Image 1 (cartoon, rainbow over the protein chains, first blue to last red):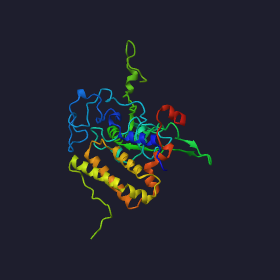
Image 2 (cartoon, one colour):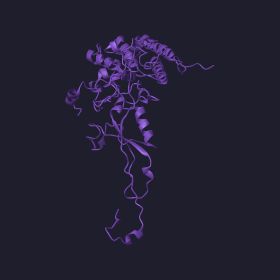
Image 3 (cartoon, one colour):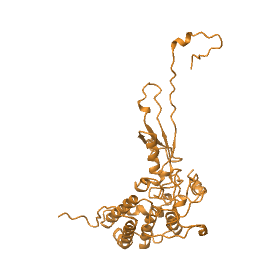
Image 4 (cartoon, rainbow over the protein chains, first blue to last red):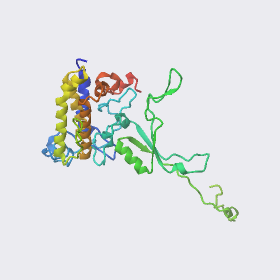
Length: 228
Length: 122
């Protein structure tokens, strides 16, 4: 390969170098860093030293500018400029944003350090409590919270041409994580940079009943409804 | 006496951001200096500047990290990769993993929705 294709390299380098303000996290975590302020007239004069963190205090470091109102909002459209890693394939979904460690408030930017494929941050995760098995009365399995990955648009399943077995390009199919509380699950999803939605469980309503209420007399309309 | 392996770095935390900055730049300079050796060792069919650009890209990916412990772990990972590459513990596939996006058109994301739709991502 004597010469690299210029557009691909330029786009890849541009994707990695572009300011992180366009890579916005979920509502609980937003990026602040932006290297190019468009109107310096309203910003303080940038001054920085090597002892400053990249996003220590707004107005102090040269890399920071105050966030505009649109930049703080979470993204709802796929971001085609995201820097890819070596595991991107033609089945990979396009992420809304990829965590890059500049989000404030996260204890650990695990998405940056874990080495997991960045396409995992494109996939939505469902956090729910699995329902009780309808055929039995035991509720033991309905106490924990489970995290499940949505299926891919393409590539989650096809028929193997040789034997007719079900093949898949989805490495998270059939994987679920069990956690103790809802907040644990949400913290995990935030830490790993997953898009998530929480499905609240349907709580069973047990009505206390008294058999004697069936025989109470009332002169007007019956106040006691026997079936509810 | 125990001799550590060549290029082994003791894991340590950075004292402050200036310290972290020095360590990052030192690690980056090591990669730049090692680029011709990597090209010769693994017989890569690309100019040395391509390897340096790739090193730059990987460092730029984490430019805006805001937490010092995260930076420490990233520096440790960079040192690990450096040791594995220079000691010839890696194989060609492991080095070419970094260049997959340039080699393989299927390993890239499309430019926009229509380009993705035409290549079949729908």
